[in-house]
Every structure is written in structure tokens, then in C-alpha cells.
Length: 297
Image (cartoon, rainbow, N blue to C red):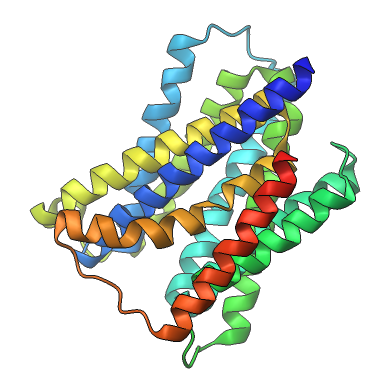
């Protein structure tokens, strides 16, 4: 019963992280609309990750860093950055209407990796919930219409999902023994250092970013950072990676239903929905609710 209590807490944290991600994504999208540029936004957000994750070192006094295992957080941070890079490439070179729903496969990849490595016990119900979550994200995210570069988008987005899944499994598998706060800070520090490689691809210097974009950059980066800290800290502490990822998939649901009120609140452009898209997203929301109910049951 005590363990189940902690598992329930981890699922609540996943839901809160999903909400934070959805809000952060909406603000980040507006930063891009203001001309920030995806590579500049990515690097600035990653620098914010480093600062926010350093809070863990302040509030949680860990033990000495086990230097003989330093390769573990370095590899995890590298995987995290690779996932981001592949996502950027999928957006820039592929088709974003396909990239978003394909990223829903991460929940399934996490289950498969956990099964292969034997890092946690996976029930048939959890596998079903992961598949339902994947289909739900596809319905919520696919905008329809003539998608371009389907093959390229598929390869890049699937690779991104697989790499992100691998990084999260590593956080859950090695974070506790290494020292959670130290492990996660090193992961984000490595991710931040790798992101410096994006500078040559900027479409202008940081100083050239429009003043109107900065508020959206800061809001998006802070929300992304704190939700990432909440999710990864919970993964490392509770090792409930498969179920947590299914709950975390609700970020797609939050993104859809928060888009309109956020647009009205901040007077942002609103998405035009067809009747088919409304029915499609309703079906996706229903499937995701079923997947979440399976996890909590």
C-alpha cells in the first residue's frame, strides 16, 4: 500500500508536468511567431533548464558524486539533446502536422524499452494504455491536409521519440543510485553544453531578438524547465516510468483545450477548426481518458 501511494503521487506529478508542458508549448509557439527562431529558442530554453535544475542542488543535499558512474548522466544528457535536435529537424525539414502526433509513440517506446531491459514490471493493461495513448495523441495532433515529406517526418519523429524514451528510462534506472539532484543537474548541464552547437544555425544574434518575443520566450522557457524538473525528479524517485509517460501524454489534451482560452486571454491568433477536426479531437480525448483510467485502476 505504501508503494502504491508513492506511485499515485508520481502520476499526479506527471499530470502537473503535462499541464506545464502544454502551457510552455503555447507560449513557445508564440515566441516563434514573434520571430525568435527555433534554434535560438531551443538554446535559450536549455540554458534555463540548467538554472532551474540547479535549484535541486540547493534544496536537496546529496552525497558525493560517484565519478566512476559519471558516464551515465553524460549519456542521458546527450540522449536528451539528441531528442531535441531530432524534433527540431522534424519540424524544419518534415511536416509538423505529422511530427506532433508521431511523438505520441514515446509512451509505447518507454514500455518496450522497459520490457527489453526488465527495469520494471509491465502488465498487459499498461501496454494497452500506452497504445491507446499513442492513438489518442495522433487524433489530437493530426491537423489533416496534404502532409509533405511523410517519410522524412516519420523517421525523424520516431527517432526523436525513441531517444527521449531512452533518456527517461535511464533517469529512472540510474538517477536514484547516483544521487537524484546531482544526476539531473549533470544531465541538463550536458544538454546545455551540447546546445551551444546550435549557435552557428541562428537566424541572427540573441541581441537581435525582438522585444515582443522575450516575454513569450521567458514564459515558455520557465514553464518547460519546471515541468521537466518535476517529471524527471519523479522518474528518478519513483521509477514508475511507463505509467508516468502515459499520464504525461495528456499534455496533448491540455494543449488542445487550453489553446483557445490562452489565445483569448492574451489576444493571440486562434486556430480555425473544421467539423472533422472537432470530432477527431473528441475521439482522441476520449481514448486518452480511457488510457488514463486504465493506469489509475
